[in-house]
Length: 247
Image (cartoon, rainbow, N blue to C red; front, side):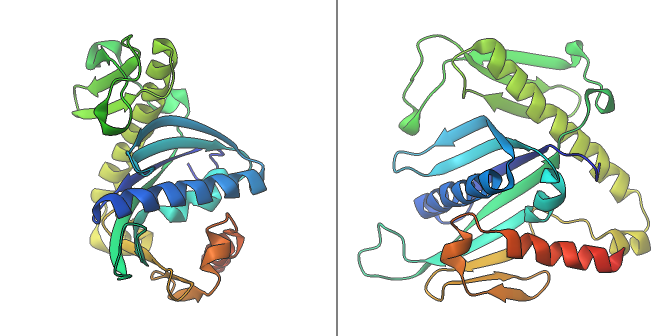
C-alpha cells in the first residue's frame, strides 16, 4: 500500500488526563495546518471532544499527493512535556497520546460481508456525554469475526455516519491483515521490516526547551512552536532522506 494517496489517522489521548486530551487536540490542529500547506483534503470521520477543548479521540482522512507516504512515520506514542494550563504552580507535566496511521485500502482490497456486521444506531453526544442530537444519527459497527468496533457521530445524517464508520473499519481490517502477515515472518525478516508498534515511544515534544526529538532517528529540532503551527516539512523530509538511503 506504499503508493496509496489517502491516509486515515487516529489520535487518542493516553496517560496524563485532560492535558493528554488537550495535546491530542493540539497535534490534530498541527496536522490540519500541515495538510493545508500540502494542499491535502481533510475529512473528519469521528471525534470525541472533552469539556475543556481537548480530544479523547479523533479519526480523520487526508487525501492528496503523497499523503500516506509523508504521514506514515507519525504512528506511535507521542510524549509531551509542558506546563498544563490548569497547573497553578508552574510544574512541567509529562503525558502521552497515541497516533495510528492507516493506509486507506481500495474497496477491492477489503471484502466485508454484510452478515458479518452488527450495526447499531444511537444519539450522538458532545463533551460531558450530553446528547447533542435528539435523533439516533450516530453509528456503531461491530465486525463480528474480529470483534473490531468503530463508531461515527460527526455528521447529522445517519447514512453519512455509517459510511464514515465503514471507512474506518476497512482501514483497520487492512491493518490487521497486514499485521497478521508480518507476524508470520521469521525473526530475521521482522528485524528488516521493523514494524512500528503503537506502543513504541517515537517522539518527545519538550515545550520548556522548545525542542522536538524523534527517538527513532535520534534527531532534534529546536523550533517546536513553529512545527506545531504545521511546519512539519523538516521532520517528514528527515524520514524521506533516510528512506531514500535504504532504497
